[in-house]
Length: 130
Image 1 (cartoon, rainbow, N blue to C red):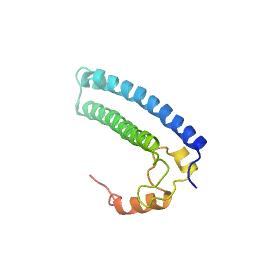
Image 2: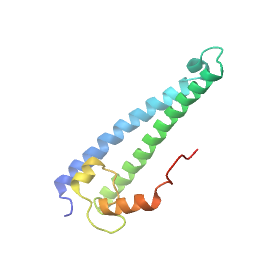
Image 3: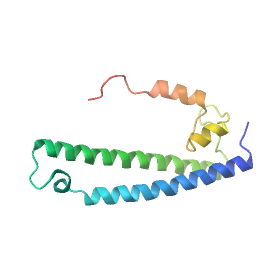
């Protein structure tokens, strides 16, 4: 069942709120990355263990920012789809994406069936990637 105008309006508001929150969070994350220096994280004369912990903290901060940027890009695509009237339509099969699914993930581009298939065919191999 296609989205009603009220559902689309609710989801659009959700997308806009989440975008604003992400933009704020990304701004804070980038400020933190810029201000955190190795000396601040590891101490004035770090040993190898201190440096590795500082490096791990930096990597985690960058991963958080990367994840947030990816989510923001997905929400930008959702905004475009809302504007062109294709929001709520699966990009694979053309079927409807359920309202509850879109409430849980406003950037969803696929119905559950197609997303499941997509994840099966595009999953990373099991086991360690190191």
